[in-house]
Image (tube, rainbow, N blue to C red):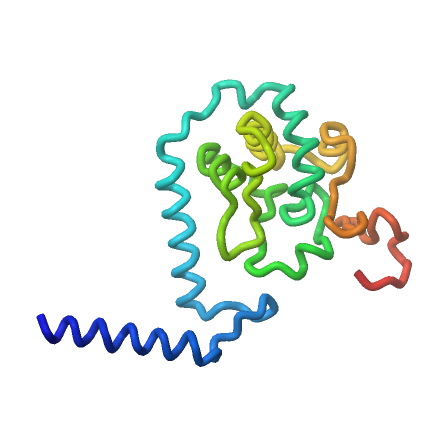
Amino acid sequence: MRAVLFAVVVLAAAVAIFVYSGVYDIGADKPHWSVTTRTLETLRERSIARAATHIAVPTDLDSEVRIREGAEHYAQMCAACHLTPGMRSTELRQGLYPQPPDLAKLGTDRPAEAFWAIKHGVKLTAMPAWGVSHSDDAIWDMVAFIRKLPQLDENGFVALAGTHGNDGHGGHHHHEGGGDDDHPANASSVH
């Protein structure tokens, strides 16, 4: 028992020394060590899966009303990080680490987990807790839309959302065809 207690104390001291040394680069422009990445990804995935276990998924997620409402919310709140069809990047997304999933390509096949992540946010990422400012019903609308999102092209997205989406910084978002909303493809500007 003494050996176990000694090992725990030594480990705790080593962790404290590591943390207080400042040797770990916490900058968002440097990737985590691979062991840190794997640990955080596993922690995130298992935590969300466990928390979402008892969430009852509404049966009307294919409702056009839900999808349209969700599209409008997504364009204003999510597009800057999670992109829209045809959008390559945004000024905001370029600086995020870890990179948010490209929901325009991935969507979700786990609505309960998507609902939980949108409502509660995710620590150690830029994912906010939208449940602080939005009702459960509005969050389910977003989930309904995210399920449909990979099936849309750029025109389909605009038809549902009424806009290309907010990039979180003045509307500059780059599309697959080159250029962006505010500048022709051959304009020389830095974003």
